[in-house]
Length: 428
Figure: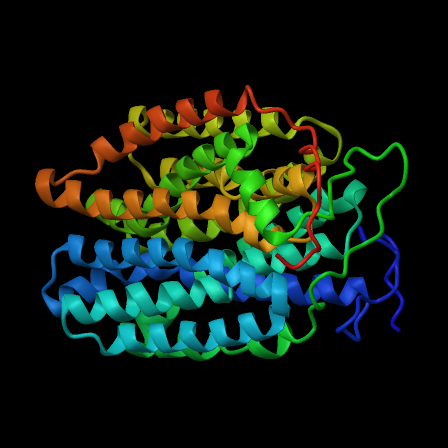
């Protein structure tokens, strides 16, 4: 067995069954999966203008395709999580990578709105779900102890942000050098690198040992799958957490898809939009790590409330400031710090409520709410732009929803959920 490297937030236990790799290498593989899967999809907004101009489509057609993608991602993530919890993440992630690559390749060939909805929407959305960074995060959660879990989850989330840093300028460069169709083909081939990484992750049911008495969380790991799902559905804090995550999806999906076009509408150079997306990813590396470190010692609900309120302030500042390239990049830097810093805190709270045995399934439930928000943000952005020729209404909606999400987190009780009176054998 390979020894875990010192200084890395691991459990220090043996390699999980079903994996010949130590926790250190499992975390590295999960981070690379997060980087590739999240990085490729984060640049789809760069294709809005060249594809709609080439095909003669309205923006709503492209926006609706990506809205469907986000919705299918959310809907498919729950069964993907169930399968990953039961059979292990490797076959699920490998199958997802194939679907993901086929969907992106299909986007290149799409000559009608319907074809784009089926390929860039349905097929790519399913592929993203089954190769999702949330499944990789569940693997990280299983090989880290509760005391160190938030920081490790922050590392996995930061890796997804690094993917955005890499793929936003890379995508723009590929479009400029090869055209948008060849750029999509290159991205489709890149996604397939997830397959060998997937087989480094552990089998289900293999978790790090608890830290012992005095740890912050001692969640009930003996729940069955059906018990865990039923308990989550009745848990007030879980429901409020999911409602707040809807707003996260609304914000990040709208900005990721429509910010490059918004920048272009302002008459700024196209490169400002791609560099803004890259800067969001770069700053989110710091934001995710800081959020993970914060969640180790402080109240996660207050951290989430502060993040959502700060997002509302950042959007308000953008609306009031002069629209220059510097202002756009400053806005991107601020949003980047707040971008996916919600993920280590949200996923950490899910693990804190119910343990890590069915982490992929339960986070999939929360993430469905996130993707409903993503669908709304992406589609409504395109719809309102085509109606009014402006994104202003969407920015104002983002402010109001940010304040609402901040308020929703305040009454959450962060203590572990109570065990049911009689536990059924694990496996559901």
